[in-house]
Length: 292
Image (cartoon, rainbow, N blue to C red; front, side):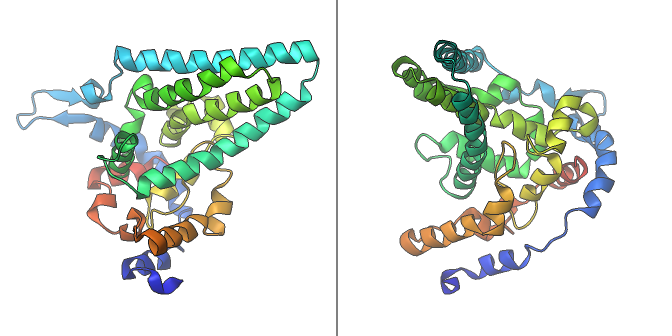
């Protein structure tokens, strides 16, 4: 089926052997200095500076916080009902296994969703337009996610959890199902935080987060950096990164892209990954490279 691929996709595929290990350990030491250079914007007169932290588009509103409260409350209800069911039935093995399965599958789901909104649709797409626009902007300025406030980052996913999981809480009484739903939806809702930590500075992240990244429970900084480098078509998973090797090794997303192109004629954005749309700004490129 390779005959259906545009020429620029062939260019992208030929660059998948790029090395990304030796420079990662070297550049991480210099991030703090470059962070300060990017975070402060000095006017031409040099008399004042403006921190990006004051940018209103990165700050949480009360509406954002309300959605976070709603999402977290929904998750607590889900886990509480599951725990009560375990106490009543004295069966905890099933719910525990269900939690583990939910965690594993949430990583796969985050990768599929990330791949979809990275490659298809636009800001005008119904329902998903805002997230599509945000994720595509993220490729040009990946470091901004670390400065966006918590509720601002999570409000959309928290709203999704509220609308989808709350009805399940009201209708379902099975502790195993509730445990799975709670673990799966909880990891999805907080995947943006795991994503944020994957862009964080090593010496500013909590030690527990670094430990979880190192053992592969959370997606690591060194793994996620590959997603922001050519050919921009790998390492999509945002919970643990557990599925990345399988999905990338067996070229699952590339196969889906070919099928979509063959059936619908829709080209994913990653096929034109050399465009300026996918290239980070010069100053943020050095920052992204150095933060790992």
